[in-house]
Amino acid sequence: MLLSRFVEQCEQLFGSDARLLLAVSGGRDSMALEHLCKRAGFNYAIAHCNFHLRGADSERDERFVRQLATQHRREIFVAQFDTSSYAAEHGLSIEEAAREQRYAFFEHVRSEQGFDYIVVAHHRDDTIETFFINLLRGTGISGLRGMRALNGFVARPLLAFGRAEIDAYIGEHNIEYVEDVTNAELVYRRNEIRHRLLPLLREMSPSFDSTMQRTMNYLADAEQVYMDRVGDLRAAMIKSDAAESYSIAIDDVRSLKPQCTLLYELLKPFGFNVAQVEDILCALDAPSGRRFLTEQYVLVKDRERLLIVSRKGDGVTDVVPQIETDRMPVPADISLLRSMTTATTAFFDADKVALPIRLRHWQEGDRFCPFGMRGSQLVSDYFSDHKLSLVEKREQWLLVDADERVLWIVGRRTDRRASVTTETEQMLRVTIC
Image (cartoon, rainbow, N blue to C red; front, side, top):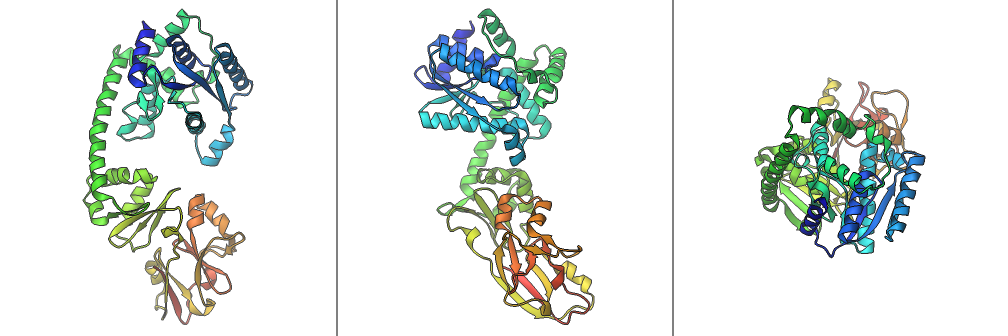
């Protein structure tokens, strides 16, 4: 009997006395979950998200769930989201944006109202679909092991059941639900997998579902072995130098095998992504001072270490780098300057620079004349053209002269008005340390 198996799953996950927050959309899976929890006698309230993505249907779903809560005498928490705007603002797909908003809301209610667990209605078919979604977009081992039945405060007691079992339970008990018409639209990758790929695989292999479950269980075990290794490396290699300040010896980084994969795992808790880790590895032989940013941390390449410092308070991001200058003759072939220019060194016509020079961050209205281009450009437009994040914009250094003229967006582009030409008598080399 499905109810007895469900209760057994719940006992293993959170016991019978836990105070639960049920995520209820009004769809068939969440309505089956609510029905089972009610029959089992669990202490629960209901949470519902209105993402305002389906017009009148979104309002219908909210009314349906509110009525359910009233009929079953359950406390209900409802959130209203402008998901389309959130997705555009954060560069996310609609599905990713809705997921972020949903779980942030659930966790807020859980912590504020004192619930023990958030219970969601994912079942076995969902975790198989997620396996293929992650496989198609590229993922590490954690993306292939399937959903966890218990992940922090999020519990999924229906993972032991397939969609067919849940549909049969709904029919047996005449459970009302609302149909999300977008579940049939193939514009969403999950729906393509659900309606096209999985039926084909089940036709090819009648034991597909059980085989997939075993495979994901094997991958979960492999991930545990892998993460134990990563944990050992993290304990051995990451040194805590002060409060929210860490370092990794570059020699230790060079010894990692596979290098990129393991360094990513070490830096992942600080918010660094794979692309940044690849750039960090390329910078190991670069001069000191290269910086890489996340929302909460900055990583600085030092001579022998990678320094990781919290961006809260007086961290490394608040320290203005030093400027070294020296005058020097212009080479006979000024094209040689191209190879001499680096992310931390630039050359200017000494007679065209009003001293003293200094470093500061971007200010509204800053404008410069990019070397190699005609006309002038707002620095803010340059940032937008090169897709700098808000964090990168805040952290970017500008070299300005005594007249507040922008000479150099450090590490990126110099101003042509002070560039070295064949008429330059003496040039000024500027090095950022």
